[in-house]
Length: 294
Image (tube, rainbow, N blue to C red):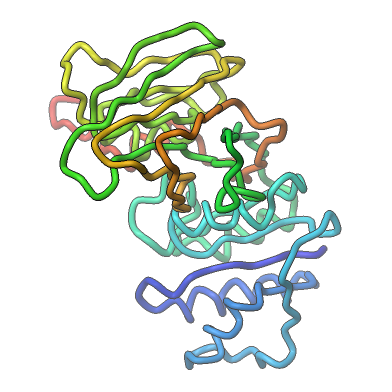
């Protein structure tokens, strides 16, 4: 079994968890490849007994990999998606961070979860993505012109609102006077969109969500559309440019740019342990059911 690993050292005692992962993988005879930049960071830290010189590295993935492990939080997993792209490699999110809607395997259960993975005790949850196209084309957005969570437009270098003219399937919807606009997948519904008042959606839903950011008109509400919808956006404001973000990646676009957002032609496969579910994650992360009256 061939497994790729990517992670970030943003959290406390990451060496301990990386060593646990390496131990259980090597015990099961897996061929481990660590992302080149991540291995260099590991070399700078003590606490890993596995000889670093014996670990193979990768810069790019290919279809020969069976699984891809993301070690960190949800941000690390979103970065992992840029390695996997459309290769169809299942991603396992190991949460050494805080909230962890995407990275659902808790650090206390690393050994048990990876052993279950080796024994085939897991399920695959396929997640839809969004793609963006611009006219004229923008080099900053290609070739990573996709997002697992959301694509958002935001004002830049100003405290003034921007206007986002929005069309759905070439039919005019409205003009959002706001700080920006979020177009989210069901997976991203628990992220940026949720903090701006958007709805929580099951990751398996065939929908996309439009959520305005701090709209000037209080009747500008979040809207759920079929994921077959094609959105067209045109931004204007006092400044001659604005920001567009794809998950954690940011680019600057000029006001004469036309944006098209639609469902991506591929999905991301997320590994889900047998004792895990989206409903259980909601209860744990949002503390639903913790009311003493329940």
